[in-house]
Image (cartoon, rainbow, N blue to C red; front, top):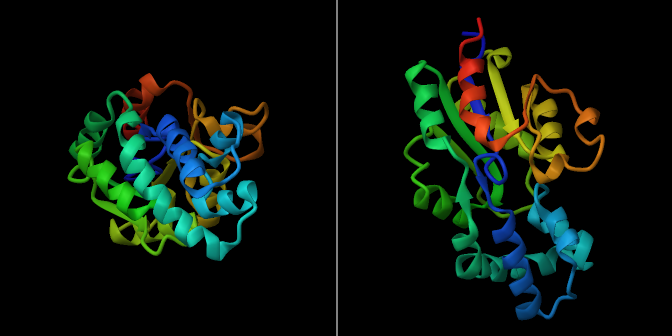
Length: 222
């Protein structure tokens, strides 16, 4: 088996959280008195660290994002969770990975309280070997989370590891961590024309319905 270690982003890779994030931001705007952003702009929050996007699109300071992220978390529990859906075949995919003798992990910059709640609710927490979370809710470094996963699942050869993600942020983090990248080409992050061509990748998964099948094919590689 060429690849034995499989690391996944969460939002947009294992599950569709886009509508939940947008709804939560819209509620946050009302609660915190922030300017109303268009849905098109709100979808630009998908992928990058939340605080980074808050500063960029709401014009707030880093200090102000501390309180805003707390309010946002409450908004997500109120309206975001119910709009979250796991992609078809994801649970079975993790079973395939383990049956092949490989290891899996999740690296996410999502607020750790939200990420933990979603992973548990969807029954994914017990299926992966390790979950690396942005514990301090800082701007975060996705590459550091990926490297944490690499260490914790016992990967000593990064040539045997893959990082799966749906955004340029994931692709850049994979490059900095030194892992081959699998692009979820149907995700929001790679929708702009030519976005995917800017980053090196080993494989592209073009349809959410094919995630499990494509991972099965990767597992068969020698």
